[in-house]
Length: 115
Length: 111
Image (cartoon, one colour):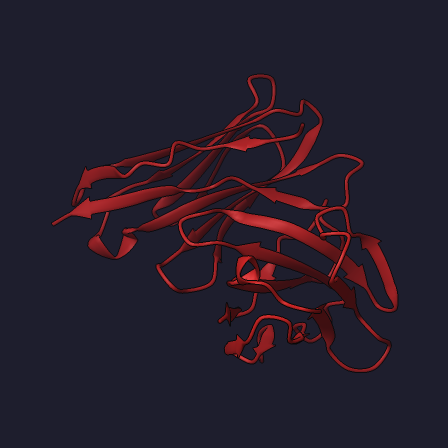
């Protein structure tokens, strides 16, 4: 009964490199959300996806950030040309239905450090 | 701007007492409410969800929702040191596709 799986747990990138964060939702869940958390801060919504569709990306920076959830395989959050300000914990969450009716189940997160 | 507000704390409560955590939200049409617990360096864990006015109890936890006053609270009875964590309030607003989180309240249970 695997939960939400995120990898890698820790990721170190130099400024200007690309970061790819992966998320496999819980079995039976087709709704995926990505959040960012800075130290001592709350969770900031980034994007909400269903299979092959971006439903809401209002929290995603317009440049350098993209997300996908293909028909097969995990959801990917991609950050191009990383900067120090991208250093944060990135959490993925999944649910079996949309946000009105079902809570989110979180993965363990990916801690991104940009040097 | 739709917001979820929580007192950042820390809230210090003696072991065995009742801890009361509050959350207010700005949008009157919010419909789904959630409380999460987050230990330092860990991911959020769901404690409870509540969708209608009134109280909902689960073990030592009780969630209270008052949509007219736009607040939701979490009571923890018989507080234990292991309850020391940050508690996050989360809200889904009708017609919106995301769940918004407050910044959390740090709770410290004094042994």
